[in-house]
Amino acid sequence: MLDVNGLSIEVNGKRIVEESSFVVPRGKITSIIGESGSGKSMTVATLLGLLPAGAKATGQALYNGRNLITLSDKEMASIRKSAVFTIFQDAANSFNSSVKMGRQLYAFSGERTGATVAQFRMEMAVILADLGLSSDIFEQYPFELSGGMLQRCMIACALYVKPDLLIADEPTSALDMVLQKEFIKLLKRLNEELGTTILLITHDLDIVAEAAHEMVVMQQGVVVETGAVKQVFEQPQHSYTKRLLESRF
Image 1: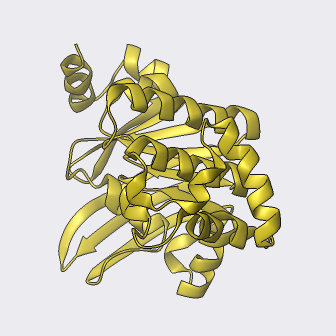
Image 2: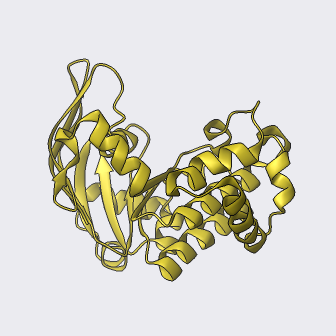
């Protein structure tokens, strides 16, 4: 589904990612793991066409055969709307604190699919209930909900939209251990029940072990190892991967 070849990213002339290559197979959960500053989030920004000012990407990021790097802003916006759903690091930052959740959830999901507000509310209420959330949320503001509830709201939107590709960028870093496990369980459900391809960005090996099928290891802007999670965990090839695995225990 997603084939990245020779991806390099510069920010104000400084090379952040160097000739990175990896594959995200359809129907699988692939995790990119690496320490802070390894280039994970900048890689995601490139895939979404959301690089900051002063940043430039070269190489290929083929999504269903189309190079995301060379697409126009309009073409990228269309892909983000119709095929790709993104859950960012802190769900609280994804919502406007002064706007009720009902309107925002509709913008994230029902509006994207062309549903009427009435149709959306009826269908979303069922999804929310399945996630242990009341439709009373429609009338609440983001600051009235916990971080875990807000992340479940993002999962609800993904369940509603049924995206071709879900990108989750450090989605559990603001959650405690219990909520992390709950969130990962919901991601796996999305993958298993709907066949959603997921690209999961994390620095936590336990999350990789729990959720992912494939993994990509990044160090200082370079992809140093890729492979099936079981294979990499049992037979790591790169010294950095070995150190990461050793630090897990």
